[in-house]
Image (tube, rainbow, N blue to C red; front, side):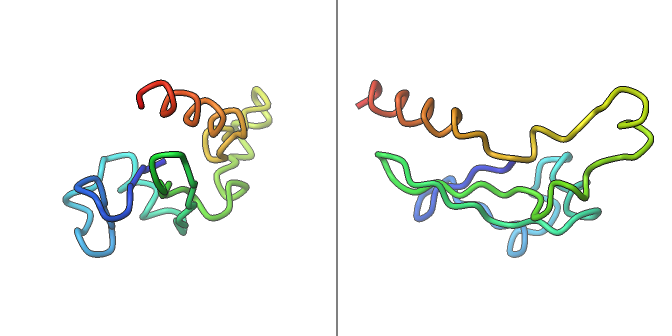
Length: 92
């Protein structure tokens, strides 16, 4: 997932910067899947994650048949938000 913080020097937009400024794994995803923004409100401000709009599109039938592999990385887990809030509060 690509992390952006709106209104800061960290803000990135693949549509305006083009693929030359994107991390290689995002370029690959951008070419294969529709990406979507996922805003997350944290104590120090909003962070926008860019993720596949439909994680089910990432499932490879061959990989799943071999070892039940699923794209867990494509979903934001609630524990990640709790951890981010905790870390931000400690940094304040």
